[in-house]
Image 1: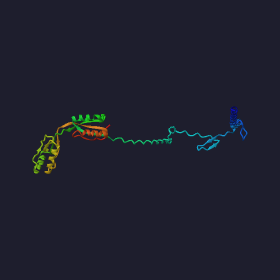
Image 2: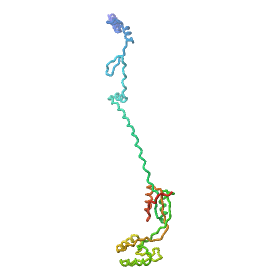
Image 3: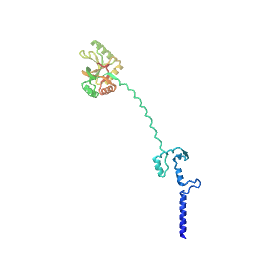
Image 4: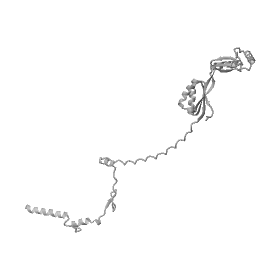
Length: 268
């Protein structure tokens, strides 16, 4: 009983296998599976199908490769995060502005042809030269000797008269104005027949005396510095620019009785 059933099932399975493999042919076309496979691989009849990005098929055109995703986007996608927007392209650096034109050359500093300073006595002359040394004037500095008075006092006086008699007449006029303190200088004096009205150690004292005499009506009196004649020195400084000249002026201000001024064009 079991043997007929076994053989029946075996025959049925074999039939199903042969039918499934197509060896029994297609009911509609009558083609067997080997013939269908050969027809399926006819290369001259094959047509390539390409799909656009929207998914629609276009015949006869190769599919365009999809753009590669940025590495950062791929990494984000693999981590389950949405890809960020592609970074904006860097803004091009602005063109370098042209260099500003060079400033116009400044005019050269004015040069003073010749500056004269003095008079200095012997001691002050040495100190003046030492302070000028940093300027390195060299041949641009020259020194000349002059006779100058070493003032020790100031004399209020009426200038020398031509004769003794003229001096006596001037003295009589002073008495009429109420001035009695005076002295007629002798003939052998450097101020022959001058009338001395007072000697002062300071110039301000002499000027005060002169102002009082003017109030009394004495208008011919004057102040005369007194002292021996000594050798002094005057310096000539040539071709100084303005900063150097200002330095010289600042140095001379440290000495009493010294004047600074132009001495004309420099000599060759």
